[in-house]
Image (cartoon, rainbow over all chains, first blue to last red; front, side, top):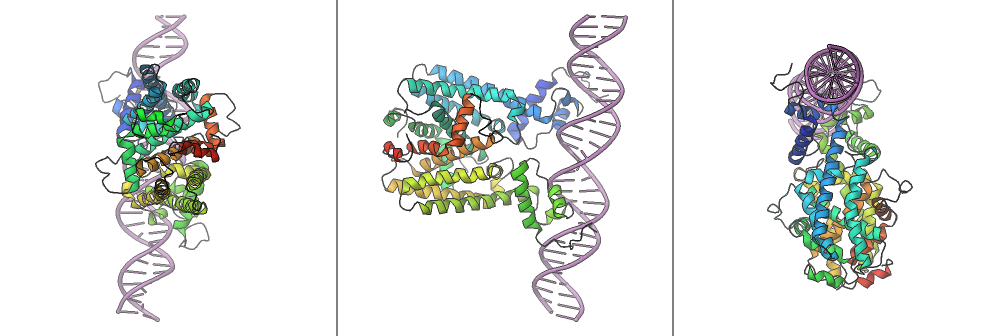
Length: 224
Length: 224
DNA sequence: ATTTAATGTTTACGTTGTCAACATTCTTTT
DNA sequence: AAAAGAATGTTGACAACGTAAACATTAAAT
C-alpha cells in the first residue's frame, strides 16, 4: 500500500517520467538522472518505471528522439518562412538550430552523447537525425541548383555546415556554466567563446561564406 | 592482509590508476569507469585510490589535463614544421588536431564533457585549453598580419576555426562505433559522415576557405 | 462474468562512490 | 639511532543506484 491517496494506476506515468526527466536534465544534467528519484517524484514504487521503459537507457533514447522531432519541426518552419531566398534560409536555419539547442542545452548534449545512447539499438534516433539533416541537405541542393554554392559534393558541404553548427553549439554548451558576465577576463578562449555566444549569427555567416561561389554575397547578411 | 605478494606500499599507484583508467576509457568509455575496478586491477583495497584522488572526478580531471598537454605538444610541433607558410600551418594544425583526437576518441570526448568535468573546479583544465587555443590564435594573428585572412576580429576567426574542428571531430567520434565499411547505406547523414571520416583534410580546407581574403588560394591545397 | 493485458508493488541482488577510523611504512627531524 | 610526521595503505560501513523475478491490482477485451 502506497502512502498516498493516488489510485493504484498512475494513469500517465510514461508521460510524467519523460517530462520530469526533461526537467531534471535541464536543471541538473544527465549524470544525476535517477529512475528511482523519478519514481519517488511520481509517487510510485521504484520499479514501476520499468513497466514503461525496458531500461534507463530506453527512457533517455525516448527523450532524445522527441528532441530530434522538435528540432526538425523548428528547422522546417524556419526554412519555409524564408521562401525562395536560399541563402537567407540557410542562415536562418543555422541560427534556428543554435537557438533551439541553446534553449535546451542538456537535451541537445544528450542527443549526441554516445556514452548515453546507442543509435544502433534505437533506429528511431537514426531516423530523427536523418530528418533534421534532410532540412540542411535540401537547402544545399537548392543552393547548388541555383549556382549559389561552389561546385562541391552536396554531402561534403552539408556535412561541414552541420559539423560547424554542431561545433559552435557544443562549445557554447560545454561552457554554459559560465555566463557572458563572468567571461570578463581577457583569456583568448574566453573572448572566442564570448563571440560565439553573443554573435552566433556572425559566426554562422562566416562559416557559410566558405560554401559560396561568390563570397561577397555574405556581406548583405553580416559585416564580412 | 592482501592476497598478493605485493608489498604494502604499491609504489606507483597514482600513475598506475591514470594509465589503467586511460586504457579502460579507450576500450569501454567513461560511463563504466569504476575506481573500485581500477583498485582491484592494481591489487589494492577499494579505497586506496582516494589517497591519490579526492574523488573519482579528480582522476578524470587529471586525465583530461594530461590530454590537453599532449594535444598542445602535437599542435606546437605541427605548427613549427610548417615554418613560414601560414596557410599550410593552419591546414596542418587542423589535420593534426583531428588526427590526435581521433586516435584518442574517448579521452577527447571526455575532455569536453561538462557532465564529467567542472572547469571552474580545475584551473589546470582551463590552462590546458588555453594552451591549445593559443596555437590557433598565434596562427590567425600571423595570417592577419600577412594579409592572408579577411579583416575580421582574430578571436572570431580563431573561435570559428576551433568550433569547426571540434564539430567535425565530435560528430565523427559520436558515430565512431560505425566504421566506414558499415556506412554502406545511402542515408545522407551517413554519406556526410563518411566524407568527414575519409577526407577530413578536404573538410578542413573548405572550412578555412571562409577565412581567406582570396578564397582561390585554397585550391593549392584541395580541389575546391 | 471471465480472461487477458497493462501496470502497479515487493523482495532481492550486486555494484558503485565515498566516509571515518585504523595500520603500515617511508621520510624528515631531532 | 630514535622519534615524529607524512604518505599511503586497509577495514568496516553507509546510502544509493539499476535491474530482475515474482506477485498484486485494475483496466480492457472477450
